[in-house]
Length: 516
Image (cartoon, rainbow, N blue to C red; front, side, top):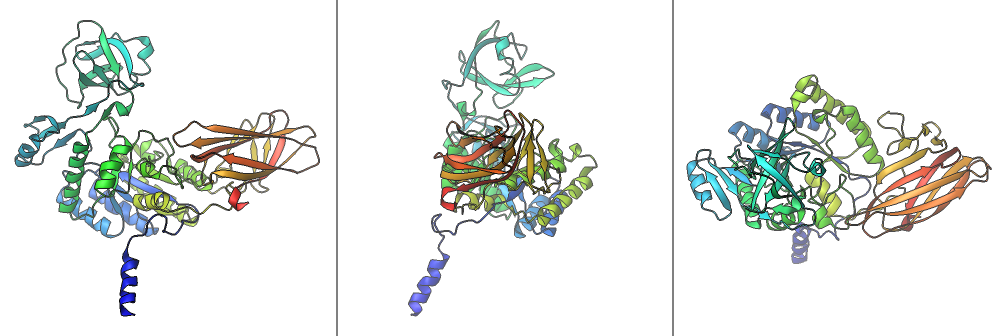
């Protein structure tokens, strides 16, 4: 008996497989992430503010040169349940600044190093070039006095922001930096170097897709080891989220991050850009092993030219659509009217509103575990109510009113003039397979109500269904039927329209086949 109890106790400590973990009910929630190294006071005060409302935040830090004050603050914050994420040792994949000469001399001998600068103690790493991808664009242009000139007019749009170009004649890749409408040529690693004139137009290849340049596995392994050691020496828990640095670099493919950081270093999730759409956080993903490393954030924040009112609307719509979100801020206080105090007050008010509306707030890792490590219970009803307006903008949460459509929140009805539309973009939470839909419509005899549904399929082309209903003019009429969600569906776009005559809409419903 004692042996059995001991065995049961030991078994209870073993981690559950994804299939054995209890399913997640309802809405997974939202996450707030703050990137880059900030004044320690800002970290402390923002963490305390989240704790005041019963929540925790996630900080993505650059770990190579953390001073003792930052280390102490991060240890304190991590000890209270906030999570510290890996924003790479030097906020870069392709270079690293050694902290001392001994470290520099040791790293400079590594085969992953392309060249090194002993003066700045910076190591510049090799990259893998894939020059023959279908998306690469050949063109002819000239480099003159360090500037790209005489390129075709057809390339103006493609060269309209920071890119990489390859000169096949030399095999060299350069970065293009736009300053005052001039396209300045730098080294791949963004060094300012002397670049020989081409003496006329030559063949070049624009590398617009991030897949054209990728880091070797050995480089990713080296960076992961540096971060782990930096976190260990700072007294921090090992990081479990990889955060892509922005700016001049080519973005890393999620397969590579999943392979090295995920399988070898135990990371749970990341924010890769390639092969992820603007909205990437959905339950019951068909490809969770990759999508967990594609958790791209929402950039609506007051330090990124947004407002707290816009954040509130984005959150209200996300809740109504069953779509988890990661909200990103870089704490660029210079962009916020009123400075730090106004920034903090805005988050205080926002978090109070979130708490009032019972919206779950998770850390990055918690959200990843809920989305990708557990099955989701189907929602009893997918369609948002036409009477709920959490953010107070006069529009039912989750919906968009187009071409003169007007909502009456009190009665839960929407009036569609001829050509008007009631629509939802990215409705999540549906099971693949059959689903039962219904809504009530009222209008004159002969008026037509049209339902258009577009299915957003992970790694595939969208598919569509259309249902038409001609009204009899007998007051409220129920319009219903069956939809079929294809395999791979992660969300759907839903539109009700009145193509020829005004109608009114109420009581939209959508239930997965197993819940009907």
